[in-house]
Length: 213
Image (cartoon, rainbow, N blue to C red; front, side, top):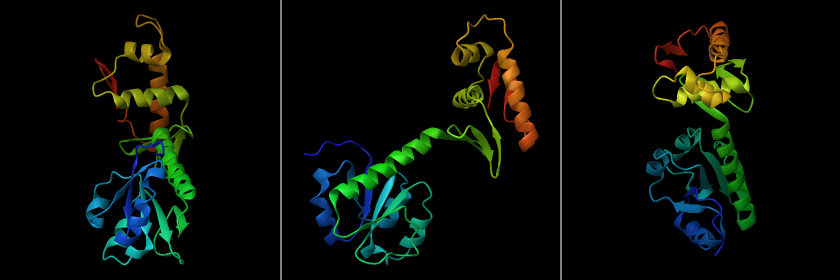
């Protein structure tokens, strides 16, 4: 049996006839294929990183708009001859399916999705893009430093206000008793950048207990 490199479940939307041919390949694939029994219900679950779409089921009533509305799911079309132009796809495979090609396309899409998830973080109405070092709101953005990225992540990840000493220890690895205004200076500069670009003075809050987002 082929080693399972990814535990990710990939949803297959297809006819029963085509599912039988895919079923014969399952032990050679580096991911787990889930055959859909109810297309519209399965699409609502929002748990699949990748969906395989066989062109034989694209005339299913209500399926096309549901597929096009999936923004965080990669879609691979499996076609006999012609593309289905109204369907927004990330990749296309031509029948008959080649195992190596299917593996490569699915794994690349899964890896790309994981990379994007790890490199960006939604924080209220903003996106923190750690790869580009940008803090975005719609078409506006500010450039943030590595320390500012760590600050935003720390404050956002904690449910309770974060004390100055914990920030020092976590980000700068200073002693909690260190006599420094590093935290105050960095938060002041970050607040100033956010206020000037987004006119938002309420994202980073502070109280006697510490700082929070």
